Length: 242
Image 1: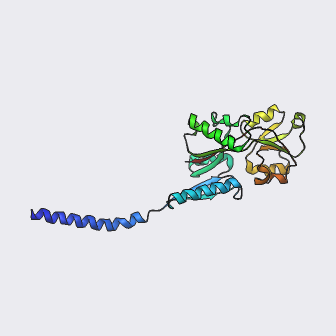
Image 2: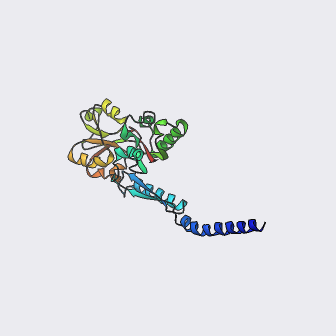
Image 3: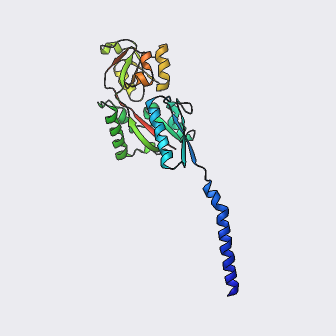
């Protein structure tokens, strides 16, 4: 009996001592560090909101999750952002699904000219769509949030008054909007937002489809002269986690 008492006492001391050894290790657990690739420039409102989202994640996890932002497509350009998340180049990415036409055939429904007249309506529509259909084409990633922008309207270097004025125009667009441009008689040119300012400035394209905010957020107001208010298409934008 005495032998077992001594053995029990030794085990207790061993466990007690071991707890002192391992407790500092747990206390020094490193935070989870993630990088976030976004094609918007840092001053753009979408980049600002994404940064606030990242800060909120850090706050709610008491600093256990830290997110480093990479703006302006410096980590992965807009049209490569989705694949960058899948391949692990970035942990989180903010992408326009229309930049990779054909990759998301079900979600492309959000690109159709459905007459949605605001970003709020488009955002509610794409989130309701995702919750209901859970498209498997997005199973490679974890969708953190989705939103749509305002109507894609036509910004041009020359005035457009009739459909005839569009014929022969090189129009920057993405996704299903290319078919709309073709039907109007224009020539669709696939191009991410980050490349469009220079393309408009140098005459590589004559016009671009985008929401009104592009005149300020992307500074297109410096390189286009006219905006034609037509409800062409809203586009789904997504924050994705690998």
